[in-house]
Amino acid sequence: MALKTLDARGLKCPMPIVKAKKEIDGMAPGDELEVTATDSGSVPDFQGWVRTAKNALLKSQRTETDDNGKSLYIHVLERK
Image (tube, rainbow, N blue to C red):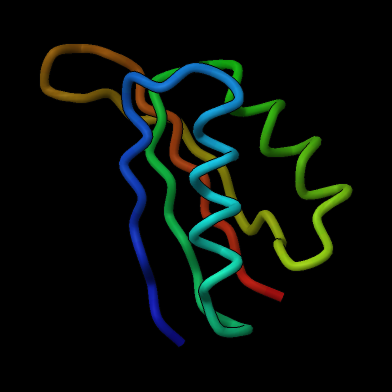
């Protein structure tokens, strides 16, 4: 299993999902992708996207704060 990271900070909907889908499509089953976004809308966006995505599973979501006090939304996806 490999863990890849995707920096989607500063991107607005739907770009974090567009970039995540492109990464997931090129990954092997069981590999994980950690997406870091600054758009709070990415939380419900990823939840909705994985309901229809045939090759992605949302393993976890969490919120962290960067050094400047800005919220970061971390989404961990697994390639099915």
